Length: 161
Image (tube, rainbow, N blue to C red; front, side, top):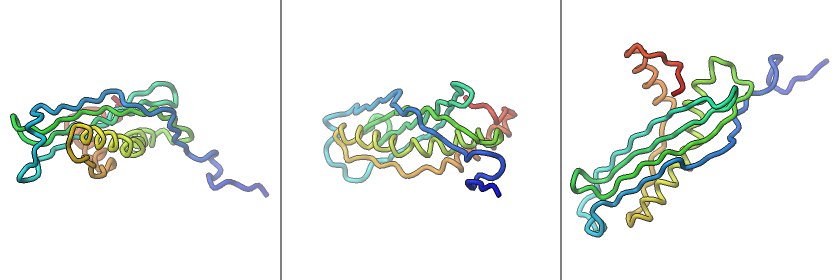
């Protein structure tokens, strides 16, 4: 009697391999220094935007880009601004074709996020402020929101770019 390794008769278990991770672009601005470095009466208004993009590099290799943009303060009173494009190259193996897009847009950014979060925290700290530790991101909810927006707009939802 043949034994299986839990993957069933279909073959090998699904795998996501991280081949590389890198900061593609990082920008930090402290436009009102040194005035902005004085203690504030109240906490600044902080806004953060998160975007995920991907492109196929080879049959099973994908570059996934996690873009984080944020600022503290408003308008001319901005304390700081940052932009980070943090990327990873992932190899997907034994993943059903209908699951590739969700894996790329949910699981891969989930792998990248802790590293990008630390880069942002370090950049803000090195700019003279307390480190900004971003709250975790629900990439599944973000994916579903973007999928709904694409369907409403008549755009194909399966594109990677």
